[in-house]
Image (cartoon, rainbow, N blue to C red):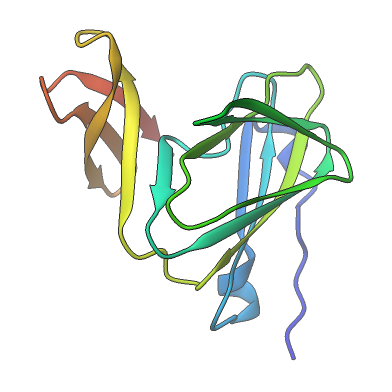
Length: 153
């Protein structure tokens, strides 16, 4: 048996807070992640789909808006949404209040994942190439090489 804290008291001062609960709890078959996002922040860095993993997002507080192939879907406090393997999605906080979300994925390992981001040069959502270093992730358009995102920590 393992027990952990979902959030810490300093999360409120951060625009983006993430806690990989599956690592702390030692889960073997399910990924469990806790997200907090300020207004304008996204849950994931890319519009994406997992080939083998299904994902469930439970909105604990706030409103998440998921960009999907069927258009935007709002999920409010106390609601949940499931994405089957192969379904495209990206969650965002488009509201002014802080968003708190619990994400569950099974199987735990995501397997193959397709990623897309808006490319200003190509003027469309294109596949990305990801490069990572010790404290940074960069996304580049697979078609033209334009950098489409960078995150440091």
